[in-house]
Length: 459
Ligand SMILES: Cc1ncc(COP(=O)(O)O)c(C=O)c1O
Image (cartoon, rainbow, N blue to C red; front, side, top):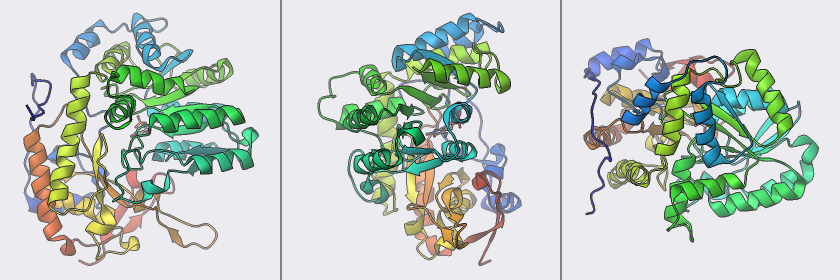
């Protein structure tokens, strides 16, 4: 059979409410043209993020009832510890409430002013936490990552020549670690190859610099390796994931993605010295070392989720169902980033809205128009998220790609929801020249996309 079905059946449903285009025009205007500021109940299909939005399984919900809420040494912590350790294999497993808490703890513990942290492409919160510790977050993806049409299989890879150069010139005193994000979310959900991880490890060994993975979507990355890299077709996703982590000295993870969690994160590291510092900071702001800001029931659900995610039937469906959306949009002529990512399809904002300049925020304007036209909420990963005025001359610097991410929550929407999304985007694409550009009315200095407001330029 060629048809790939959802490998689950639905036991509980949550109604979603239809709205009219007139209502949505009013709602997005009241939200300052920022989809983050909409009430979720006014969204029909929510593709803002795949983070914390997944549906938990019957086993996870059963685990919730088993949650041990003891302050210290809860049974649920030891289950969590064993589940993470069984895949990641590091010495210290430290729970946190979500990914950015892990980032903050590690950056506060080991990043000094003037340090450089090279990576394939840092996620926005990672970049913000590195910069908050007065370090430099240096993105050095492979050159093909910047070309949305390039079909290379591992566009998430780090540029090894540039990494070599950075390590040789900046030196290990000022590079506390190299961070590789699997899959590369800000670069379009593109995977990192095992060969690239292995070669990064060798460079890190040579310069005695630790290698850390941002493992938010490690299972999707493992499955891409199975599909695309020679020598891995017969290995299980778990075996592949274990090999990926074997090249690392540590990992940060938002467990709201590839652990099927609605909340949760982890710092997993080998260094005793780092672990000591991280645990001290954890107690200051998150909680005791065996719960890290989570309830025992969360730890339990995450321990089950991180095992479930490696199920091959699930990963096959996950990657194929995302590609289904991409392939249909591509067939309609909608400009997209290709190959298709694991957790999301990324529309090419600049090409979709060719009539808008960078200053008119094409990707962001597209995301606002998409909501108005269809009720679908998406997230710009482009000019608003990463563009900033250069302190030297005040001129705006725009990122290489201005994308609109359609992130697909795990086990939540069916194929007919996706057919609606495809049809709506196709319709909007036909009328694309009518999408008005937007400009900022308020732009916060840090992570502007979450709370900024805008107004239309042409209407
Ligand atoms: C690659 C990556 N790292 C870190 C984070 C931050 O995680 P959280 O939202 O749990 O704080 C995200 C969230 O989307 C992410 O995609």
